[in-house]
Amino acid sequence: MADALDVVTRSFNINNKLGPKLEVAAEQNAILRIGWTNAGDPVPKNGELGLCPAIPEGAKIRALGTLGSWTAAFGKGGSFNIQGDSGSFLGAANNGNVITCERSAGNYSGFAMASGKISILDGCGDDLGSCMTGGLIVVRGNAGLRVGGGMRGGIIVVDGDIGNDPGAGMTGGKIIVNGRCPNPPDGVVLRPITEAELTKLNKEINDDNFQIPNDSVCLESSDSNNFLTKDKVVSAGDLSMIGLVPADSPRNMSYATCDTVALLGERSETNTPIALPLPLFPILQDGEILSADKQKNPSKLVEKQPFIVNENPRSIDFLALNVNNLTHATDALTGCGGVVVDMMNMPSMNAEEIDGMLVAIRSLVGIEKPFGFSNGVGRIESLHSSSSYHNADISICVIEDETGISEAASLPLIGRSNKSNLANTYTESGISIGFSANAEDVAKLCAAGLKFVCSTVPAEDYQQIVEWLSKIHAELADTLQRLGLESIDALSRQNLRALDYETAAVSGLRLTGYERPLPHWFAR
Image 1 (tube, helix red, strand yellow):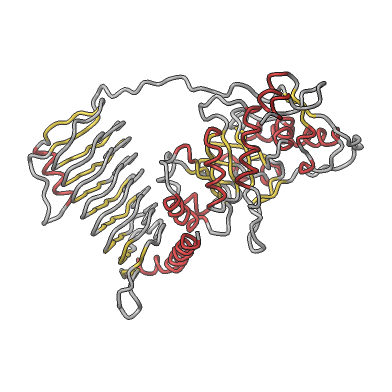
Image 2 (cartoon, rainbow, N blue to C red):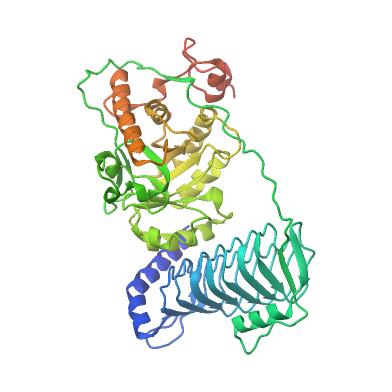
């Protein structure tokens, strides 16, 4: 752990020092060097990760040594040359960079890239060019499994052998192979390269030492590449059969004020926490409609309430980062209030790769701003253990992960995982439900031990969002008054009752009337 933290710290320091120099170097047409002293003596890097995200147009960087994962990600048009090896996710979400790796690269090189060029001179791992939508990748040497998996555009050239399942799930783009190529999977066709393609590609590669030969083969999506869609499995229930009871507290007077604020990101004295006026993260596709400048009558409640959005976040909003918006998220990352990485829509990553991703992302967002992960309830242990290990501020359990697990059944799963993985950490645990929440839903989930609730908005309309939040605010205060509580933090499982036998059976809550959990919850 100490070694991993040391690498992360070193990586942040390099990015922080490079940041102010990039624009100046671009203006002066100078090359910034990593891995050499000021006197020019080589001091090769060893495992630093997440280096040089969002290299701006015109900036040039040369690095020496073995670099870790997520190097030169989120490119914006600069140049990056590695005299050595690179880890996984080299040039991920590239949007204009020209990247050269003079030795080998790991898995997922060029992941989700949209434009630019990546050259790897000594082979690479699995999933080369996965989910790319544009740009050019050229690999000298062998490549691993699933080259071009899920690609929608762009060109991949491999001057060597490739592994099984090339082009799996591809719907666009081309894969050119000069070497042994296994039979492609269904939906992918293999054919000889044409003279016109050959001429155009060799001109685009523009390398006097390398020309694609005319006996190369081309893989591309077939016209019959139609993927069957199935109905998604949804949650088996809601929260309607869970009740709220006052326990031993007398009812508050109607004029008594109630505190509904939840604080997130309280990890140090120097860190500024984010205050949620309601323990709620509304989920919205585009945050542009929340801008006060866009509205005739902006609402103070909306202005102060952070949202989770996929694009155009305000300075208080969290950006939900996933494979669909990764490439074009660079500007949004620099202006948002925090970030949530949607692990349900990202490749499986080990701890080093997640660290590399976080270094790259947080170098853009700002290391002082909160971040977190979201994942399905079926992977709750993995979500919470990863959130704890990487010191995330928030951890969001998504109910609608196609497992069909209901909200009531998820409560003991989340509770046990919170206790075993998040105790003695500052990571706050939340839940994302698949429907638009009301005040009672929020109160019930907070009583179950969750710090906040993520919920879709009733409609992507500003006035309807204002009315929805206003109603939740008023009704949540009324609920707390009825229960005799002064703060949302005072809610506990003592205030919850299962209203039917089935809910009591799956949730472990006290069955109303029976006033205790069902006997099987005490069995060992």
